[in-house]
Length: 514
Image (cartoon, rainbow, N blue to C red):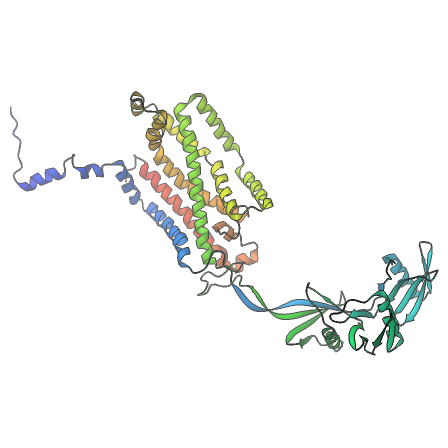
């Protein structure tokens, strides 16, 4: 019996039949696996949030550094008034010693002299030798051996060279001290006649040569020259009991240490220092760190380093893992056993101790920070490929026995093309998920190493070494703007990669209903 076939009554019905034809290109596109993966991915709201987080960090790191006017290692300074120790002043009440050239007067002899002087003895003995004390004036003694050889002079008044004049010889100092103790107004030394006033000033032909004082002024830093006028000024003020005074426009403050019997003179100076730990402002929205660098700028450049290291390390892991895993899974047999035992060895390698040792070696060798960063990426990539190789090998073991691989053998396709053109593409979905999930862990690893001082080094920034600026509880509690923003950026980036990885895993799963 012939069945009647209903024909389209009008043009509209023909159009609808044509629209839903299975041969239509648009219908084929909708049914393509790639489109289904994309559709499933964008239906996953958490994956979209992760993608937005990653893009925001990428824009912040790579474009922000081009907009902000500061450099990665640019330091900022401020002028501030600081008090720093300038000189130490003591009033000498103990005996000091000078010896002629070629003689020595050890600390033991000094002790024996002090004991004899306190007891009022004229002689003392040491090591079967006898020494004679001669009082040349108040608090001035000459010490000689039994045969009359002068071996030392003990004194409390100190002969100081005048400004720009070299220190005097033993003979000059001894004759000056004798004349000062005897109240004389002149003395001769080394064929020259010197004038001496009651204040202890010594002149030669009207020019200042030296002066005698019991005030000892010792500079606290190299390069400080203490003039005679300043010594006399300090002596006058300290004798008068003043602790704050001004000399030639500079303010000073004196503090007495009774345990050391020393006056510490502090100088108030305007100093050009790092603007470190500056609070957030319009100039520095996130403040400055311990080196006086803009925290926001460091965050941007640090994001570049952290993200680039993450991508390059994952690329190296994937590249090595795909090659070795593909060869192992396709050939099997002794090749598979050899590569898998190598994988087992790399699984057993303690990565963190090795990285710590290598970091210490690079510190010892003072490797350039840029070269060090390259070494860090190579080391992390070389130590992390084993997981990818095992994943690729497992997938290829299940794929190589399928019909399409039999067809490639029948067609005479080379082994390399079978592996890298027909097998590896079928593993790409799993690789994408693994790489995306691994990016977050790699960034965390780099941040941990940089925090420990083993990763990225100054002047380069990374989120890890920015956080490492928190080296004590005081900084952590009082300067939150230094480390919290870096921690937030790190958290956003890692969470974003994890969310995207979860979304890709669900999108590539053919059993997903969404």
